[in-house]
Amino acid sequence: MKKIIALLLSAIMVMALFAGCAGKPADDNKGGADGDKGTIGVCIYKFDDAFMTTYRNNLEEILKSKGYKVSVVDGNNDQNKQNEQIDTFITQGVKALIINPVMTSAADSIIDKVKNANIPTVLINREPTAEQMSAYDKLVYVGCDAAQSGTFQGELILDTPNKGDINGDGKVSYIMIQGDPENIDAQLRTEYSVKALKDAGIEVEELDLQRGDWDRNKGQEIAQNDLAKFGDQIEVVFCNNDDMAIGALQSIQAAGRTVNKDIYLVGVDALDAALNEVEQGNMTGTVLNDAKGQATKAVECMEELLGGKTYASGEQSVYVDYVKVTPDNVKDFK
Image (tube, rainbow, N blue to C red; front, top):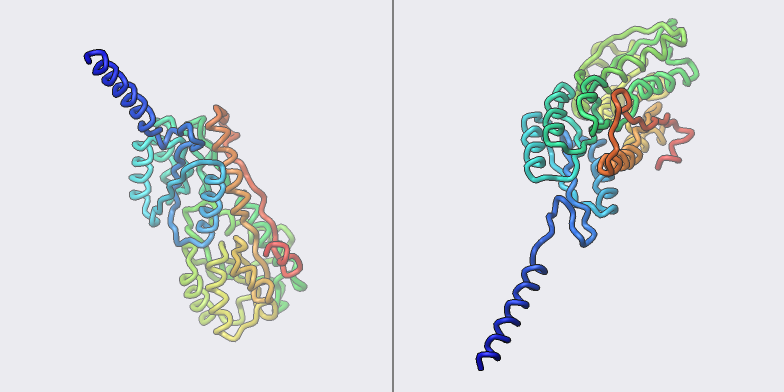
């Protein structure tokens, strides 16, 4: 009987051992043996930005297709909130971070956090300086060269029959609806769109420059006020993004003006709504800000970092080209 009891106890202990091994969960963030590669933390500056919505959807799709778990958080355009989100991801021990900073000026703080935690990090959409990024060799920025997008906007105007000079007075009079002036993309698009005209020997006149914060309603309001103030003097409306351009279009149409006839309008991003307006002749053109291309490159760089790659100072910015979109080629992007 004692032998039987001993055998039963041994069997129970073996079963308990196997149950314990089978029941122990893999670390969700670090990756398990079941094909899960771990969790990637993604910080977006705000979810209700039309372009960043397209971008984050592409990111999620690509990351999940590669076997990662993805946790995406909305910074609500609040840098303090985003800082807390980054701290939480670090505490959770995510494998890597992809961060779209709320404020470019917060780059030093963000870089310090991820460096101290030794977490491979990809910054997107808002580019720090090369000097700031050089503080951490497991950090890379993926985006587009904003100067190129501004140049392309200017070239869209130069490609019109009268090079933007609708009234024939020898100069192009424009209003500029800017995004967030702290954002390097807004700064460079504002500068280089006009520079392209100047470099082509065109005289320009800035009637107004207003901050629109990438927002459609603000674009509509700024354009409405400027059209009331300057009227037919306005020949070109430059917008740092498509959402503001679509807002401006509403005011242009309400004022009885006709794009490509008595006023020109250009944006950046090639949002679906903007592509429709370009196709219908309601926008002069836009510039493709390749969300899918950037998301693909961001994940590629993240995986290189996870594989042990480091980036030398001065080599930490990876760019994806912009593309001019006009009525002639718009169907290629739909």
